[in-house]
Image (cartoon, rainbow, N blue to C red; front, side):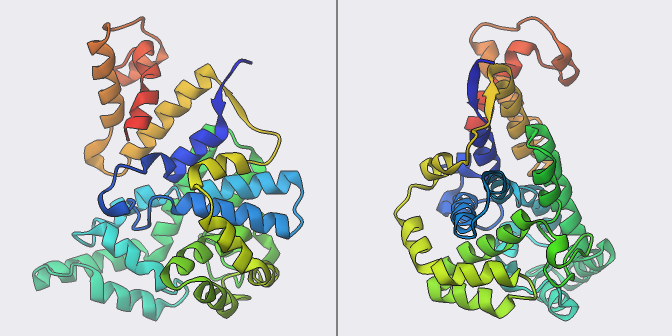
Amino acid sequence: MTPGGRCADAATCAAGGGRRFSVPGNRALHGQPIEHGLRRCLLAVWLGEELGLSAAELSDAYYVALLGSVGCTVEQTLFAKYAKDDIALNAKTLSLDPTSPLQVYAFGLRNFGAGEPPLRRVGRVLSAVLSGGPAEFQAVCRDVALRIGDMLDIGPTIQQALAQCHELWNGQGGPKGLKAEEIALAARIFHVAASAEVFSRMGGVETAVAQARQHAGAYYDPGVVDRFCDVAEPLYQRLEAEQPWDAVLSAEPAPLRWLSQDEVDTFGRTIANFVDLRSPYTLGHSTGVAALADRRHGGWASQSASENLGLARHLMSGSRGASRYD
């Protein structure tokens, strides 16, 4: 196979790295800075090394950390049903305890329909209650992450862990309510790394360590937390010294996953279509841009199976440009 690119490139694009210039104010579509997913990945891999993981386990931790929250792109469509600014609403959920029904429903009463007429606010709150609450979001995030993982053909152990990124050590997560070592190690590392990246930005290393210790044995694997707390300071010093995009590509554990040129085209189209899932109004936008660009530079090429989407084969290869456009 002639390499056309690395699977890590596709995964980092899905994680948000490819969108670094596209959102004003350095705020990604899930309420986090655009490089949150890349920084989380670095923390996960370095923490995995500190835990003595094998090469295969490190590879799992790497891809799970990159892809574990890709479903948040579609999750935002759900948030849009309850608030005018769904990005800001999602950002407010950072300190919310998902295992506490009281906190979850109090959060909804404060924030759903804020700034709207009373009857509309009541309607939004009732809609959220009837939808199933956090379980709806967990299921959406899981299903989207699994779909992207399947498209990237990243293997069964990574797929299994991606399905568990909303589970909690004490069994009160979802959607399956797995607990302790029923949860894949890569997912348990993801939990710690994801929160650590967020809370370190909110209050520094001390805040990240305190938050991890507070929830060890509840949200997080106590063994992973203990090792994280031991090495947190040097991990963050290293993190701040790195350029996330380049560092993530360099951190991919061996053996590297290479894509053929045809696979690069396919994955480019996959990521472009995935990004367009952000809103019902943007479905097909990226491939449409690619189609227009191709027509501008030579017209329609021979038809293939992709004509089911109304596009020709040559246009489909242009969706690599669409994914970069996004």
